[in-house]
Every structure is written in C-alpha cells, then in structure tokens.
Image (cartoon, rainbow, N blue to C red):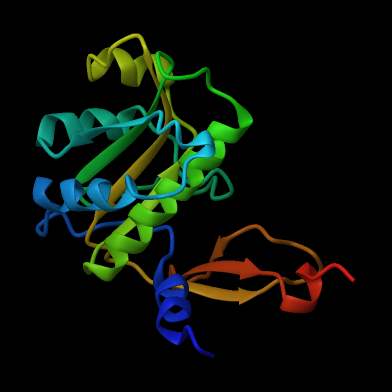
Amino acid sequence: MIFDSLRALVLRTRSYRSYDQSRPAEEDLLLSLVDTARFSASAGNLQPLRYRLCTAKDEVEGMTTLTKWAAYLTDITLPPDGHHPTAYIVICHDTDVSPVSPMSMVDVGIAAEAIALGATEAGYGSCMIGSFDKSGVSAFLSIPKNLTPVLVMALGTPDESVLISAVNHGDTKYFRDDAGLHFVPKRELEDVIVN
C-alpha cells in the first residue's frame, strides 16, 4: 500500500483506559496536538472549536470523576485507581461562531482523530469520551457560557494492551479476557463496502 505508515499509525491508535501516572502528558504536548488539530477541515471553514487543556493534577483528578468510561465493561472500574490519565483536552463548540449542529460534530470527530493520531505518534495514548457531565465540566473548569463542551479526550502514557479482533456473530462490543487484555472487534472490509 502507498500509505503503509498512515495505516500503521491508525492501527496503533486505540482507546486506552489505563495509564502510567508516573509519566505525565505535559502541556507542551497538548498545545502541539491542538496546534495540529486546528489545521483540520471545518464545515464552512467556520472553525468553531475551542480547547480547554487540563494538566494540573487537581483538574485531571476532578475531570476523571466527571467522566464515564467503558460502558460495556460493567464488572470493572475504569480507569483503575492509580492508573488515571495525566491530562485531558475538553473540545468545546463556540456558539458565538455558530450553533452546535450535526456538521459541527463532524468537525469534532476530525479534530479528535487528529489529536488521537498525534498522541500515538508522540508515544502517548488517548481515549475519546462522549459520556461526561457537561454542566459539571463547564462549572468545574469555569468554561464560558458560549463554549459548549462536546467531547472530552483523556491522554497519558498507556499501560495496557488493546488488540483488534474480528467481529464474532455481529457482536462489535469491546471486551476483556481473563488476562485483562482489551479486545476491540472490527468488521471485515467486505462487510463495510456497499456494492
């Protein structure tokens, strides 16, 4: 393939839910990730996204309490105690620029993937979190009212293995085996091509 390095990066970019807290993600990394994401495509080139960076320990721990992780894994608590992320990026939509819309959510996805890929390339891991207390995050981080939090990204040095597996009987739910390995089923190419 002519884009083997991009494919390899995408395959390495997984959602991590356990981190090595002794190796923090520094603010310079987050600034570089957002600086890269800001060049991403934007519907109508409106560029309504704003980013709240969290690297201070009290903010990171507070954010962890405002997020919900791995809904399919009801028998374990993630992230585990002592293995929390070391940074967060809260992606917000500036309603002074435009109203939140389905197209602006496409902007969020594009920017979040750029951040996730960049984090992986830099030796870190991330997790996109859509299940979080939006009003709680706004209040906790003193986010201005015109900025609507739409996605939270956890970042840090992953200390777990996440493996891609085949979809079994149509079940795409991620799972963990008895050894704690995290598996993410992905559909086959022929299953996603429409003829």
